[in-house]
Image (cartoon, rainbow, N blue to C red):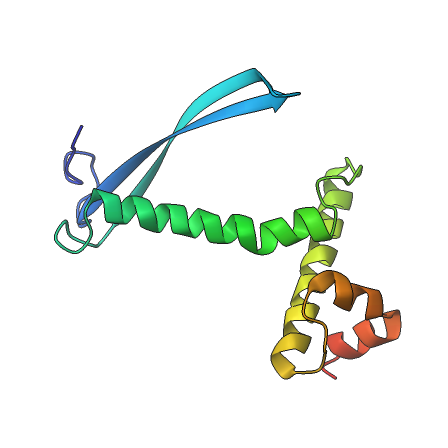
Length: 138
């Protein structure tokens, strides 16, 4: 169903996009729970500039980059999903430290200060004194 931004109360936007997301929670290959939600987006791009398939591709590309970027590295390389920290404060602190590790790795790569191509390799070389030096700007 097509709705104009004005009809949705979003004057000044060129397009209003509603995306239906379906989620299935699996356990041992069987669906144990499912849900649907709608996400709403607005854009200043007009239909000639970006039609529905182009907008869908842009949204998929954004979330794909998130999933395959820091999210994947935090989950797989740094074991975030396996963490047993349940308290909100502790989980926040650990997320901050994981982000710091990712940032330090990217900083060293950008400066050409490491031969490590991937985070696990670099992490094995990282020492506390090196981390402190990097944080101080060295």
